[in-house]
Length: 131
Image 1: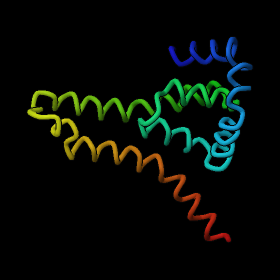
Image 2: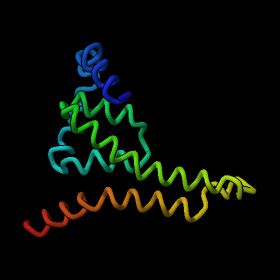
Image 3: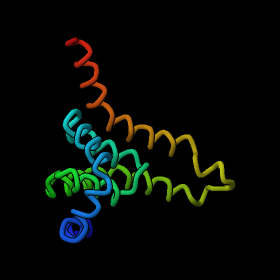
Image 4: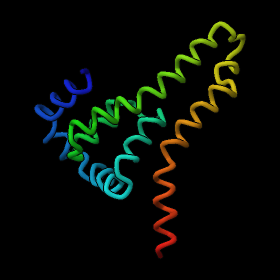
């Protein structure tokens, strides 16, 4: 619900002003979306590098339908939630800072990113075969 409200507020109050400020970046995002499709949006959500509100805001300014923003946010959130729950479960075993980035947690995040990148890599591979 928060995503939907934020998107509606952005569209109503900030769409023109922010859209004009970041025209070039939004164009690059549109090109990536056209080339890789929804997989690109999911990869951004899975990677956990950018906050969701930034991904969703840029997607909104790139004219991605609200319905698509909502379902990609939900799908992108669930795998991360499992990783965070797993990491939280391991909090009782943390003895040092290095334990926070245990191999299991790092591997779980790696798998999320790999999962999101598979369609993009396949598309690139297919494109290279056609050339």
